[in-house]
Image 1 (cartoon, rainbow, N blue to C red):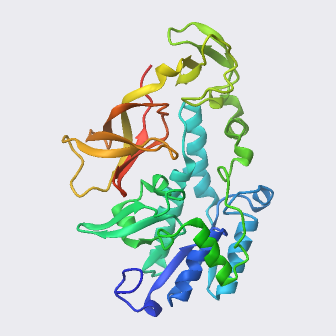
Image 2 (image 1 turned 60 degrees about the vertical axis):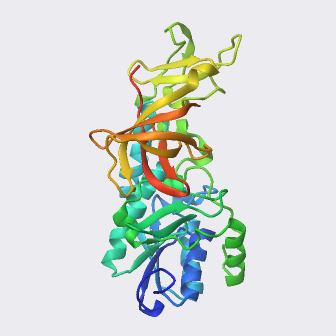
Image 3 (image 1 turned 90 degrees about the horizontal axis):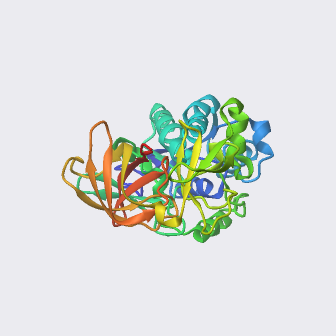
Length: 369
C-alpha cells in the first residue's frame, strides 16, 4: 500500500493533480513527484484570459495558468490546460447570479467544487486512466469502516471542509488531499524547499469572477434588467425607506441599510416576490429551525426519520452549533438547533459534522414570508 492508500508501487500509480497556479496545488504536485508517483498536472481555464489577468487574487486564468505551466515544467511533469469556460459560466456564475436575484446568498466556491472541479475533472481523471485525483484542499480523507471518510483539515485556520460538503462517496474513492495534515506556513516552507516560483505568491482573495468583492455590481452587470429599486420595510410591513436592488443585501447585514432609528437595524428577510428588504432588531435574527435542500449524506446509515445528533456550521466562519437533523422527502432535511443561531442566510450551506468528520450537508432554504 503506497502513501495514497493504493495497492501499487508509486511509479505504477498515475495521479492527476488539479493545478490552479497557486502554492497549495503546486506543492501537492511536487510532493507526489518526490514520492515517486506518475503525476499529470491539469489546469482549468474558467474564464477569459485577458479579462482575468488584471484581477489581483483571481485564480484559474491569466497569470495562474502560466504559473501552473511553469511549475509543471520545473517538476518535469506533463501539463494540460482545459477550457472549461462555458461549463463554469453555466454551473457556477449563472447559479450565483440567479441566487442573488432570488434573495439568497450563494456560495459559488462550493458549486465550483461540486460541479466543474470534482464532477468534470474526476471524469477527466478516469479518462486518463488515473488511480487518483489530488487537490490542494486543506481537508483529510481517512479510511473508515464503511469506506473513505471526509474530515476537517488538521489546521483549523485553513480547514476547507465546509466548502467540500457536497463531495460524494463515489468521488471520495478517487480523491486525495496531500495537504490535509499541514498548516499553511508548512506548505509555503515546502514550496521554498522545492524552489517553486509560487512559494511567496499571495492566496487568492474574494470570489474569482467578482473583482474587489463587489457582488452586487457583478450581478447588475450580468442582469441589468433584473436589479430594481424597491422598499425597505419593518416586520409589520411599514415602509422605512428605499433600496437600489435586493442584490445589495443579505440576511444579518447591518451596514448599508441607510435607515437611522432608536436601535440598530439588521436585514431579517429578503422578499424577491415583492422586491422588499425586511429589517428588524438584532433579536429578530435568531433561528432554531431550518430546512436544507440537495442534501449530501456521508453517514453509514441512511438519513431518515430518526434524528441524528450533529454539529452544524451555518457559514464558513461559523464556530459550529449542536443540532439534530432529520431526513425529509425530495433530498431535503430539517435541522433543529439546540440554541437559536443568528443570521441564518438562505443560500448558504449548512454542513453536518461528527467531531472532525464531515457527515454532509445541504443548502439553507428561504422560508416563506
